[in-house]
Amino acid sequence: MLTENSDVRPHSDAHPDAQPGAAAVAADAGFDDSPASSALFIRLVDLEAGPERDAVRDELVGLWLPMAHRLAGRFRDRGESIEDLRQVAALGLIKAIDRFDPARGAFESYAVPTITGEVKRHFRDRMWAVRVPRRVQELRNRVRVARRELRQQPGPAEPTIAEIAAHAHLTEEEVSAGMEAMEGFSALSLDVEVGASEDGYSLADTLGAADSSFDTIVDRQAAAKELRRLPERERTILYLRFFEDMTQGRIAEKLGISQMHVSRLITRSCARVRMGALAQ
Image (cartoon, rainbow, N blue to C red; front, side, top):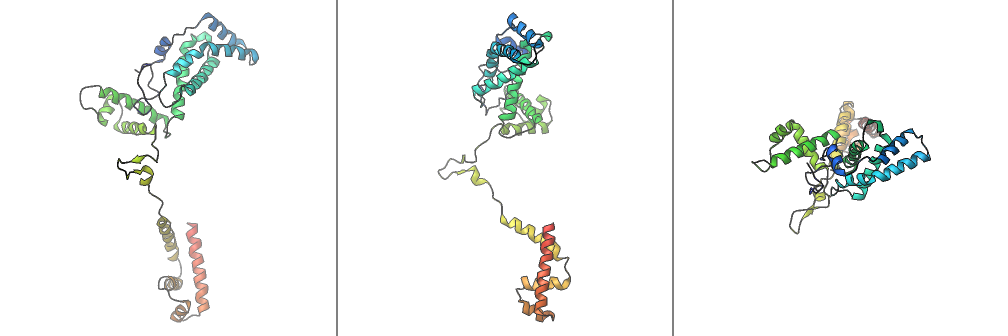
């Protein structure tokens, strides 16, 4: 369980979902439902939307905002500014005030999980460098906790995937997915230097580029299919012209037809091959 003084960093194993239970946080927050606060909640329920209701809600926000800021402080040093976290916590507080039913218990017990949930959603939806499904994010947290607990036990410094799976009651495939998700919370710049020598290169230098020859291969395959559909004489003419580099006059002499007829056949055949290839 994390404490307020835990040394947690955004690139470590810590995750925003790894928080104390709502009851423990509420007990530690140091706020109680005062009679004035309870009376305001009862009054808020009976008010219709309008200036008077807004004024009562603003008063409640002012009373409970210190608690929201305290809860936001539990997520500091995780890659997000404390001011932004306080704003998110304040939003969660407003949602809690609007949805709270004073007949169902103390406001603090309802507000704490609502506010912390809002902050966790902020991390889940805004702070991941690579967007991963929520299910995978939850797997990441279970794997992270299991690996940390296994590291604290006697034995090898790094537990195996099978050991983590057995400890977290997961399959090895789920553990692998959770470990891959650990790399999605932060990202390296493509400009980061690789290697320690003076001739070091960046990650961008290791990326491949599109090869123009790929398009040529695709075009040739498409054209070959259409060439096989041509009559034999037209295929022969195209072969002699483009593969044997024969002139139209020599082709005409070889086949016993006029040069003009050869020209028309070449034009028509090329058009048919082009149309057929583009249609693919």
